[in-house]
Amino acid sequence: MSKLISKTLGGLLLTATCAAPLQAETLAEIYQLALNNDAQLRAANAAFKAGKQSIPLARAGLLPAISGSIEITDGDGDSNSFRTLNFPGQTINSSAPGHRDNETEFYSLSLTQPLFDMPAWLTFKQGFDLDQQANAELAAEQQALIVRVAAAYTEVLRTSENLITAKAEQRAIGRQLEQTKERFEVGLLPITDVHEAQAAYDAARVNTLEAEGALDIAFEALEVMTGQPHTELAGLAAEFPIKPTEPADREAWVKFAQDNNFTLAAARLTAQAAEKNAKAKRAEHLPRVSATLSYSNFHDDGSFDLDGGNNQPFSSDEEPLVFSVRMDAPIYSGGYISAERKIAQQEFIQAQETLLYIQRSTTQQARSQHLKVHTNSARVKARSLGIISAQSALEATQAGYDVGTRNIVDLLISQRLLYQAQRDYANARYDYILSTLNLKEVAGLLSPDDIIKLNTWMKPELVVGKSESRAKL
Image: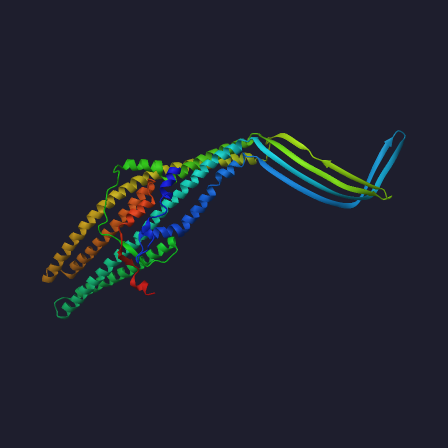
């Protein structure tokens, strides 16, 4: 498990690209802020530290226990001792009323060592599984942070590009609306063309408003992880490469996932720990044997004043050293031990079924994410060609509209298709990035190095900022 976690823990300190923030924050800078401020990761760190106490906690049941006590008393009060003495032929009653004044000191120290305690031994073995489980769960959360940061960051870039195309579409349709109105005023076009252009412009304006809101929401999502407001991010370079997966074989990724997925590793360890706990609860019916070595020192010093005036001092000292071996065996506890045994057995079955579900889900996720990477890679190439085709179609439609062979509806549709093709291309690129990271996460291969590599394609000169309406607030 130490090898599993090292890939994630080893890269927490990023390169110097994070040290000197530029005007537009980069992906690496955002990730570093999230490492320091993300509440989910901090909660996972706290759970990890608690889980690392599993071995010391379980070991305590096998180690000797040393306890000591001190008791000092000061007694002062009346006393009346009455005895009846029976002799042949007579009975004598004897009493000794008086005042007792004494001080006692008692010191004890004992050491107890378990000799045979099967539940404690199995609990100790369980502690190692829980310790490694804590490692796996923290590593899984660290990988999840990488994906969450990348998803939130690319969502800002995605919505920004959508806003850019929405504004461009609104401007293009606005110019078309002005031209349509001018042609209508000189009698070249019917009023229906003006209405069509006006409706298209209104729809484009609504799309722009929605895109502005989506961009601001995406910036707010970053603040949830970093705890700081953000206004400008570095954009993704146009030359960002689209590469196939390595290796290309889908089943190889499935094997990676089965061997290295942190969530699956945690589930395996949970099942192992539950099995040992079930065995420990079954062993509660066995006897326990322990050895105890105890030392004590008792001193009692005082006096007894008889009512007749006779003072009788007394003193007592005891200093025993005792070694004992003890066996405890539960005979009947009201059904408590049996109930705990049954609960532990069902929890073990639950852990086994959960493990089986996660194994199947991991296999399915590895295959589906691998397919998504290939699909998104092909989509990026197809969408780039789609922009060229849409641009050519728009130019042809514009020429036809100018000579009167195409109407305003045809022109508006061609414009809409061009901007939709641009949005589809941008979405395909960001989908490809996220599917690649998700595939590596499922396979247990995701590390901060992937953030660093992706960060090299984030260009601070390509500033992505909040919408203008929000920036003025």
